[in-house]
Structure formats: structure tokens, C-alpha cells
Image (tube, rainbow, N blue to C red; front, side, top):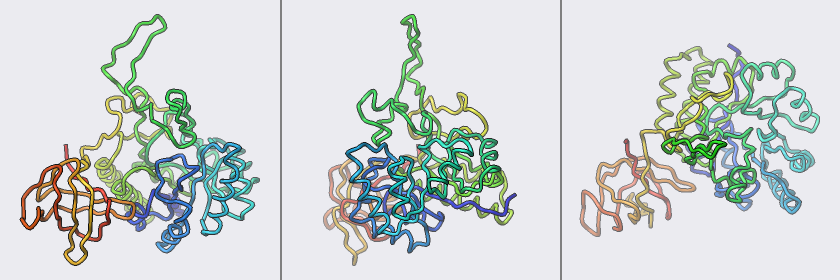
Length: 400
């Protein structure tokens, strides 16, 4: 096995997600509230970009900013503003594919990583982007391991690959289905995920095949935890974890598992048995079932999650309420139970832009009375394990 251990790059959406993966990742990638393929990830804005980048770098991590949507003529002035703000904030690299963003990034003296949206699938294209000023290429997700090895043999450019997370049914995420059906472009970050819907199969003769509501286009999540040594031997320089819209609990578990796998490869303790244990742990957080994507050939039916559109995990998060206030001296929070009730002993997660906490409900109070449970619509006082903030959401964690 190669002595070179790849950089672990985790996707985050806010400071809360950063806080749970900072001890595992080497770098994070994120987006601000524009030009992002995850348009709903809006917690980081131009106004707080400097502060967030400082938080990342103070944690000992590198910060990579994704500017990877389609850029239209009216977007160009704002692109200049964003790239200049990134330079001012001291961002470690910009992830881009549009030539306009590439050119502006290089002009501002920033390191450039080519996004997977460029669908880089051969070494000559890698070298083309080197000439444009790139220092790293994030390869197409449709490459096999053997094709990646071939690219590695022909270039010393840094190569990054996805190892875990959602897979788009279109080539490197270039999908037009959402735009066609609902006028919301996936290539501008506003995908409605019609590939996760139930579909019916129609024949040319007008006949219809009854499939019982199968999810015919829904791809399983990528999971390469059982093949980390092969990826290292292929000579890749960075592992990327997808998931900028997933919750901090997901980021915590997945980044930890891949960190432990990489460390195990470094010290010689990696085994298939340990890899299976990590895979089982990751199966307990949000996932659509696992596959190895295109690494070992074009996926067949086993690459699709036709039975379920979304979460295949046996663990669910049920929204129950929102934090109204935090009382530091009492170590307690006032919570409005808006969606469901709570009981003493329930496992919960409290989550917000800057908050992530897992705990059990130790006590509940309604007014001045201690209670064992409280119902939907009630206001309760609840002991909390650490600082929470107004408008943080409270979820009950359940096993089904």
C-alpha cells in the first residue's frame, strides 16, 4: 500500500456541521448563499464568510469554497464580488468549472480546484486544466478505478475523488429533469430530485407496466469504506465526502469512519472486518442504501434503491419542537413542542446553525411541575447538556 494518505475533505453547511467533523477531516468544502449546487445551504453568507473561514482554519483545516453553478451573463458582476470576497477571507481554494469563475479565481491569485461538474474523465483534460491554473481536479464520478489509475500514470496533478454520499442519476450531476418538469434547475442548485419519485413504466404501444410505486431512477449512495486501500493504491490525493445538506450527525459519523479507515491504512490495522463495522455504523445515519458506484463497472440494478426514495436507515429523526430560550445558570432550555411530544428517557438531537447536541431527556417541567411526558403544543422546560440557541430545532431519535 502507498505511504501517501489522501486528504479527507468533508462537505459542511454551517458552523454546527464544522464542529462535529473538525477532528476527523483535513479540509472542508462549503458554499455560500449563491452560485452553489446546494441552493438550500444558505447558512454561510458573504457577511459571515471571513468569520467562517477563520473558524475553519483555526480548527487546523483547509477551507474550499464551491462556486459551481451555471453562470449566466447577469451573474458575472456578482461572481467578481464573491471571488474577491473569497480572496479577502483567505480561502484555501475555489472549486469551479465555469471558465468565467476559473479566470477570475486565477486573476485573484487563489488556488483552483476543478469541480466534478466539469466531468473530467481523462488525463489530457486534467492537463488542460493545469494550463488554466488548476492545482487539483475532482474527477468525474463515472470513472472506474482502472480509469483513475490510468489518469494517475499520466499526470502528477492532484486528483480528488468522491468516496461517500449521494449519487446523481445524471452524468456528474448534469441533470435537466428537474428544470424540464418543474422549472427548477439542478445545474443552478435548485434540484427537486424527481429521480427520487415513484415512476410508472409506459410502453411504446401505450401499455403500462404496474410496478407498485417503484423508485426506478433513485441511485443508492456511494460507499467506498471497504475499498479504501485500493483507492490509496490508485494514487488519489483526496477523498471527498458528499453531504452539504445532510445533518451534522451524518457528517460526524461518516467523517469519523473514513478518518479511522485512513489512519488504519497508515498504521497497518485496516481489515475488511473493521471496514464492515464502519459501514454498519454509517448505515445508522441517513442513507439510501450503499453501492460502489462506477468504481468497478457500470452499476446494474443493485446500484438503484428502487424500494425506497430516501432514508434506508433504521434510525429516524422526528421533529418535535423548537428552542424558545436558553437559561445558562440552570443548564436548561424552554422548548415549544410544535410537532410532537417528548418523554423522559427519549433520545434527542438539538440542532441549529451553530448548535449540534445529542442527549437523553433527563427531566421535563411544565410550569413549576416535574412531568414524565409532555404533548404536542405544550411549552416545557428541559435540562440540556450544553449551550443551545433560540430557534434551534429539537428532534427525537427513534429506531424503527
